[in-house]
Amino acid sequence: MLILIADAFDKQLPKSLAKYGEVTDDLKRVPDAEIILVRSKTKADKDFLANAKKLKLIIRGGVGMDTIDVGYCKEHHIKAMNTADASTVAVAELAFAMMIALPNRIAQADKSMREGKWLKKELERTELFGKTLGILGAGRIGLALATRAQAFRMRVLGWHPDVAFTDFAEIVPSLEETVAQSDYVSLHMPLVDGTKGIINKATLAKFKDGAYLLNTARGKLVVEEDVVLALKSGKLAGYATDVWYSDPPENSVLMDAPNTLFLPHLGASTVENMTRIGIMADRIIGEWASTHK
Image 1 (cartoon, rainbow, N blue to C red):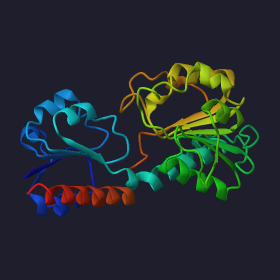
Image 2: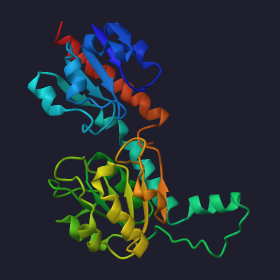
Image 3: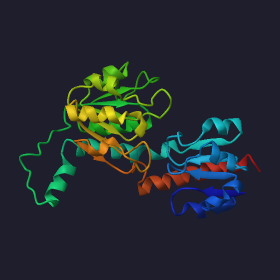
């Protein structure tokens, strides 16, 4: 059995998976691989999958399955799985770091100091204490963020299409009601047909004036042009994102927008999380191999 590791995973993973068969990172061997491991870089679209003629199992190291043509996999009896449980802490901590950095003007302060400026009066800060956080997508990562926000004595609201109650947030019936009450809005939704562009001119109009928007989910959840207009008008006080329309972004209109904080898709990239992803991938392959001898 040939296992292809198409993207960057934990360095110890090839050795760990060797017990199941040959392990390679040579993308020229896609046609011979029975198992392929991908992250966000490799797009397992129809063309990629059609070339993987012997593929039986594909694993997405991370949460989102939008980089894999799941419909094609189902049609051709290819099992498609992810390692969703692994990334919870890493992404929640990054979202919280963004939420601290924006109102504390950390990026601007650091940049100004390096430029020889002393903006003690100009860089006004605000506190998280007593503010309201609205979480759009009350799944694993959203609720992990909620517990961290509660430690800072924030009020936490959550909206999720099929979650009616949780101990970690006040569940609000609609997205519009959630954003209208929130000083901070954090996105934790998958990218599907119903969520693409969900943050747009119409939804931004429902936001509380001067709110902050955080995105560690998927770039295409937001209409970038509409976010830029909201930032320039002051409707949004700031936007922090770790995710883009493409990795890396190409000609994003966000680059010239004020009050922004940009990261290069670091959400899952902690040492600890890469270890967890490797452990989960090993477990998935082991369970699959035990039934396909």
